[in-house]
Image (cartoon, rainbow, N blue to C red; front, side, top):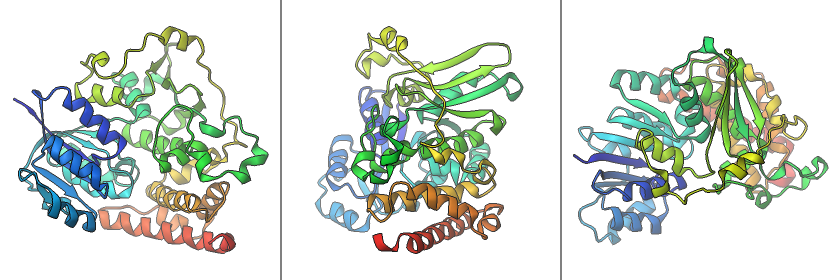
Length: 394
C-alpha cells in the first residue's frame, strides 16, 4: 500500500528536494496534499506534475489566479488549511513552511499524520509546548530534518543526559568568517547571500552570516531533546561537513558527517535510515580527502556578538518567541536597507533590555492566540527601536 504524503511549503528548497526524492519511488508514495504561498509558476508546475488531491494556496490573489487557470481537475485548490478535511490522514507530513506562518498548519497536521518531518523552526521555537502535547496525544512520530538536529538525534538516540558531557552544534561561519571586522558596517544584503557551502534563501543566509541560525538551533535542541542546555556549545567548522559532535562521559566522541545536501537528512527521515543515497544524490568518492581537511575553531565573539546574548532570556518560557519575531523584523529591515548589518545585534540587545521584556518572556502560552500576542509585541517593539535609532535610513 502506498504511503500518503503531504508537504507544507512544497515550493521552497526543502519542499522541492522532498518531491524529487519521493518522485523516484512513485510505487511507494502517493502525494495527497501540497501547499505554497505565492510562487505561481511553481504551483502550476507541481499541480500538473504531481497531481495531488489538494493544493493549499495561502496568497488570496494567487489562489484566485490558480483557480481560474488550472487545467488539472483532479486537484482541489484551497485557500486555507482549515478547509482540508480533518478525516484526511497522512503517513508522512513534511512541514517546511518558512516563518511563523508555518506554526498553525504544522500543529494541525500533527493531528492528522503518523510521522512529521519537521523543518519549520517556529513550530519548535514558538509553539513547542502545544506541538509536544499534540504529538504525544496523537502518537505522532516527530523527526527534525534540519541537519544539526537530525545529527544530534542520530548520535544520541539510545543515550540520556547522564551519559553526555558536551554537545557541539557546528557553524560554517558564513561569508564573513575571514572578513575584517572593521568593514562590517559596510556589509550589504547581497554580501550576506554568498554562503560558502549551502544554497539557501535570503532570510536563512543572513541568519547564517551572523550565527543567529545557531542561536535558534540551540533553542530547538533544548526543546527537542532532554539534555541540560548548559551542555550545548556552538563551534565553527568552515567546511560544513560535520553537523554535530557529542562528547560522552565514557570517553567516546562521536560526530555525524555528511555532504552539504539536505536530501541526505530528508531521505533518511523518509526511509527510516534504510536508503541507498547514491540513487538520490551524486555519489561522493572524495570523502577521505574531505576528512583530511576538516577544521574546527572557537567562535570569535567580537566577530559574532550575537552569541553573547543572554541564554537565560532566550531560553525562558516565551523568550524564544520574542527572539524569533524580533529577528524576523530585523532581517527584513536589513534586506530593505533600513538598518545596517550591525543593527541586527544592537537592536536585539535593546529588545532584551526593554523593561517589558521579562513581563512577556515569563508568560505561559496555553494557546496559539497567546503566541501571536507575544509575537506581535516583539515585532512592534523592534520596529519602535528601529524607528528611534535608524530614522534616517527609513
